[in-house]
Length: 493
Image (cartoon, rainbow, N blue to C red):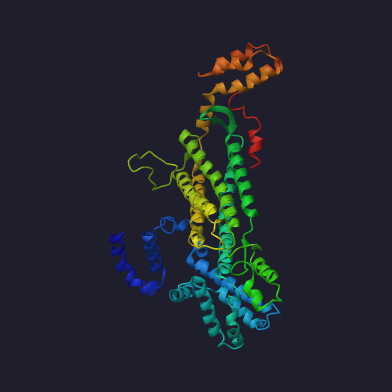
């Protein structure tokens, strides 16, 4: 790492000033800076896979957290100004309201850097946001029509504990992150559903316990996955993030000491609802994080379904049921030129494992906090984007892999034709229907542990004292036609 840094630092210093301030602009600078940052990243989310999840940077970065803290503080102040019983915090004029909204809406990376600069003195991240806003109010107050903002400075963060701001900011990050993740989830689910319908009638030998089993269709097996993913996605959609804004230990103590006639619960509830969140009325100093745990558990279940699919497709590729389109210039193996590896499904599987490891730990840890507050949740919550990032990378890898798949109909047909013994099931079932003795045992003796040809089975059927219609139906059966309702079921995808 030292060699890498020493080699790249001179190039960076020519275009980037102290503390990363840009001294030159343009595409050349941007590409070099991004490439350099990627090469020096500790996490592959910000390095190798940075281009797989760029939407998450604005949401789960330090900038994303600070921006949402500012938005929450502004929303709280506006609500205080609307409350007529808080006479010292007068109602905002239209110009003041627009200026306040602009602070949140136009919050920039430079603004976030100013907050971080203040934090170097305060050693407290949320207090730094409060001081940043007071500083901004003082500047805005010099403009015509905005002088009254300065008089409201002490109502910034009024009655709040840091966790009032943080829990709502984290909830907003998760709300926005969920939208990105759900869009990707729906995209891969639709892709699987399309394949299910396109291959609804393509017969395939099933495998239970790794052994040949009653045939199905490719489409029906894909439809199963599509429906599983939809069900878990609906559970994710059902969850609305809870939030609190009730002071140091959740009782509105300071609020009532200053304004005993204000309905603080209702006021806080309005602010929370206005941001698309759900009020949790009973908390300690922190919102209990049970809602976050529920969300992470739900995402884990969705991820587990996709991981299961990745492994199955990997197996189908291994068995030759699918071929993979080659891409010019790509190399499958550094020594074996013939190979086209299912790397996208392998990449997805690995990243889903990492995602669920992070999300699983957080779901178990976050609901636990000593007495009214400890700080172990703070550092843990900073890793929310890691779980989302690995999930998004995995989903997009599966999508890429699906785009390379080509059905190998010849291999599917050959496998079915090599396993006529799977028709032992319908034969013994019809024998049961007509009351013949020991049908299961007779088919077991005929087929178990040996290869059975079409001729052997047809001779056996012909020897049975079956009604003519039953005999003819069984004689017409082949492994490729013995698929039950699979084709119809596949269209449920």
